Length: 236
Figure 1 (cartoon, rainbow, N blue to C red):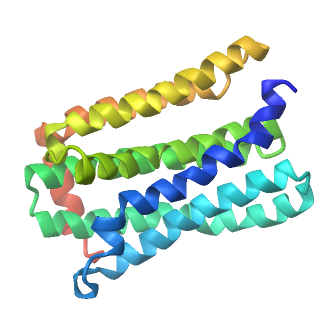
Figure 2 (cartoon, rainbow, N blue to C red; figure 1 turned 90 degrees about the vertical axis):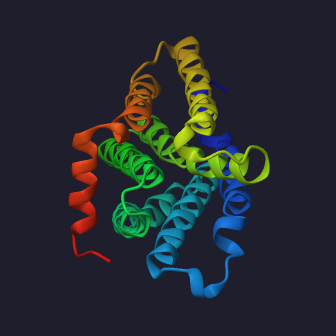
């Protein structure tokens, strides 16, 4: 079986790990927090993110079982969940900016939220535009899952192993490197199995640009002005 075929059938296993690690990562910061500390957009965002993870797992399982008609029908849920991921992220970013009062932590995390959701939206749109080409579509959908790894593993590391402030960037360098390494492996596998460079290579470039922006933009005056404008929007 070529890598082009195997990526459909085998992706269910690593994709199934994403929500499991998400529960671990958000156990302290979300699942076990006192009920009175929640803001309702956190629940909406959590529902959207776990819904998206679940959809990816089920869809890859359906491909593995060769249930392509069900896969296409269920995929229509993505038209609801993907916009909900983006919208809930933006509303939650607005709420957190007001909560943190444009502090260093607030500006930095706002950057993480905005550039991550931009990458997610790019990958999803690319996947939808290529939905008639299953080999391309599947790869872009895998990339949407990769956007979730930084927030998940940043919390796993920060809560359990290395409790450093996020804006010190140490944790992000580890999580960014982890995501980039996965993409490098996928780029290598695509190239060696069929000289492909149509999805994972540009996805790696997008991740690198987004990561560079996350690490540098938050300290600039234009970013602070933009964050102040977003915080002032009457969203939450």
